[in-house]
Length: 343
Image (cartoon, rainbow, N blue to C red; front, side, top):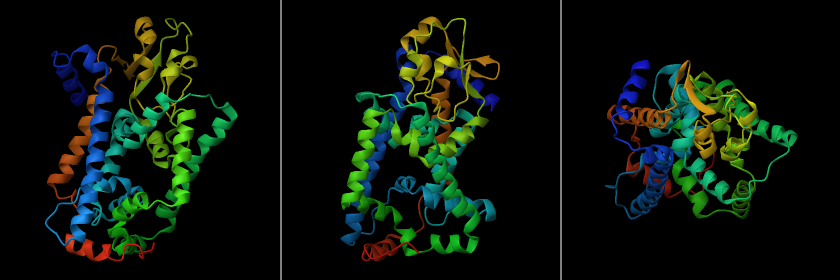
């Protein structure tokens, strides 16, 4: 990995990016992936309608499988036990693996660079009131996502046998689970609508409410990010205790009273280190072991994106991206989608 990051340093010192672009590069990456997500959603909607009209030549946008995290976890267990890649939703497993690898090497950067929900959460939070939650309440709420994570890990990795996983993966329900997810939003129930509106309102009032307190996959990636060699370091001698770093932090971490930021909620966005006061005072830096990245902190954004894209490219060209489920088979299950229940 040292060769990888050394190469990135060389690239970023060739004036290919000016300072203004480098400061906003995370936002640019986030926006690009979010726009693609919207495009993929529209493409998937068109795909479903074309299948209903018996046009089986259209290509399915495999990236929508990223919204099937439970299926991806099942695929991960089967892959670890047998070496067999998910035969139904390979793109979903690929995205999960990419998120895990990114967290291990470049912190929880999937959340801060790729995840469309994280992007929307930041947008809503930036427009909101940013009320502070009492630390005791925050601590209680913060445990919810770990409880959810433990529940999923217990059911999938302990209770479910390999045979049960294979049965589920080959079930009609799983084969069109992405279409059922689409119909959930197209024909959303009153309960579902209230839940989504409530989450939006809570995110408007409190920074990144879903990401900080409820997302089980964020909890998993946060734990794995402890393995990352990167961390934010605060130079106490240069700190003026303005607390601008906490204001800038999407996860509301109390950066100002820590020397090294190891918090599992840290998404590696570097917003704390890039606010105007922090830059002027030189009080916050992204470091990798004993190497300082004061002039190349945006390497993390470039590295995160490259890791994700390299894993995608490897999966695509080795046949581990597009689902082998034929359009004809998919269309047959669509006819009874509303009656299909969880196996």
